[in-house]
Length: 84
Image (cartoon, rainbow, N blue to C red; front, side, top):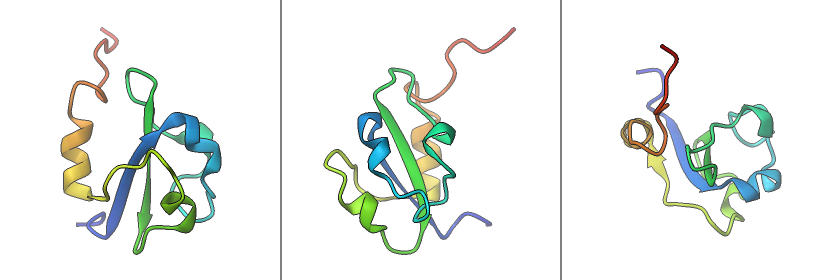
């Protein structure tokens, strides 16, 4: 699978400005997914946790790709009001 070597960390969106986007697979703060409640976001990276992610005070544990896909299928991340 293409994404099996990716790791993910969830953290509070209020810390998104502390990420060095050269260290993660996300392009910028404007491309981050935000949870339905507006509180959390996440970044993806390959290999070891980047220093800017390590420094976050609200970070979760590190998740694998399959673990993150399960999390993103939960009510806090899916579009609860999709267009009809």
